[in-house]
Length: 214
Image (cartoon, rainbow, N blue to C red; front, side, top):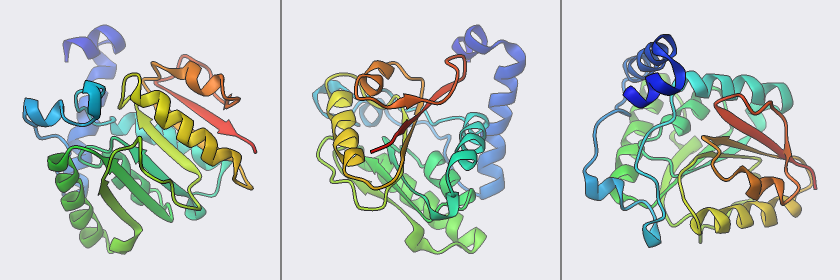
């Protein structure tokens, strides 16, 4: 909380906190429970994962506001790397994406994410086939055909993030249409820029949005 106040000020911190509570209450899910220190540190290999923290729904709303300007969300497929308890995955369903997959190496978080997907889909009459959290290593996960949005909330440090970006880049090069990357808290933005991803937003936002045109 103190870190958020220093970064955003008191008013924006309150807005962020209210949005987190509102999200869970509105959708009947739990994306805010604390996780054990073992769980939070076990999201990636080589101690390269970042401690778990879900992307704030206030920021996510801004993300999808930008995405709907540049792509048809109803035809979009998204992968969320380091999906945690699934706030971004559930948001993808809420905004009408065709398919959303979370990739999570922490088994506890992956199970919580799938339970939240179950609750969300049942509560809102959404097909359960539209989303799932996959227990997998992001460095090794084979990206399925049709994906055109990648979502990252600074889930990895180096060298894992380097390998994940390489996979996204190699995948994007082979596509016939644009590929977009949402990167919240973009510590390693140079990895995308070096591979000719084009930044679509000013750098003063909470997130970066990139496009790769093959």
